[in-house]
Image 1 (spheres, helix red, strand yellow):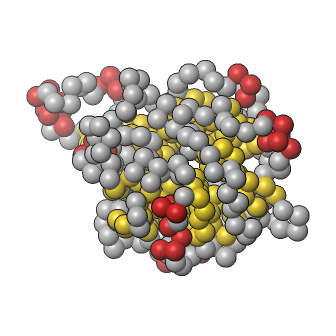
Image 2: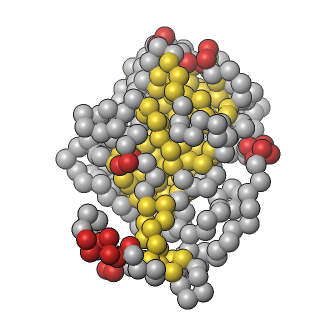
Length: 358
């Protein structure tokens, strides 16, 4: 019920045939990715911020979408009565995509960006004071503060497949698996428009037949500022290539993505906390990240795996379809049986347990 195919997104572009083959044990990273390479997250049915979260409850008579149920700060403000396909929250409000693919918002007036987001959209993502939407033609529209707009890099591009927002900045994934970021991203010491926050790179080894595979870590010099590393890059057997991703999740000062190469989770940027960035072996089908936590759903078992803090004791045996991590370390997710599970949220557990999620 929560899945909605957005095949019309690809009417505007044709992707070329992949030039390299991905092996099961020794994967290569193609220059051109196949259509639908990314993890489709159009139908997100739960989202949460530090003090506020919303979900979509199934509606009798509808085979997709649901009505909005919100809890926490602003829970006395009634969302629109429309049936929504997706919901995205900010600190003091939320927005959703209706069955007509239009954006509607509610909550604090400063977050009422829907009056500026005309047209049809397939995906939304909100931060503390910002929201970005992916239009059906693959273009991105973003707004922050009192209705000021900003643009993701490469202004004229219309080949994006996903957008994700952090504190006050957002990043977008294009149909080549590459990441671009923009916004007001000063988080103490970090700006997402600098090189640290743009698309990361990896070292690939050139095979005898010219195909590329991930180089073993033990052959790569650890100090990337050393002469040894510079000399290493002069070796024609190794090449520096941009990482490619199937899905991204922007947090506070850093971001994570599911690599196209091996479906592991890779994180980069400046983490605004005293915890180092941690990568996780997969394969994963979904990732969510925020200030204090990174979690992913394992592709083979649908189990939840998190990088920091053991907060999942009561969630270990659940098979997950979606997961969302809040800025305070809260976790909400939807099981394969359309049940909603949350921890550390301002809501009655019995009320949540009764909900059947769209």
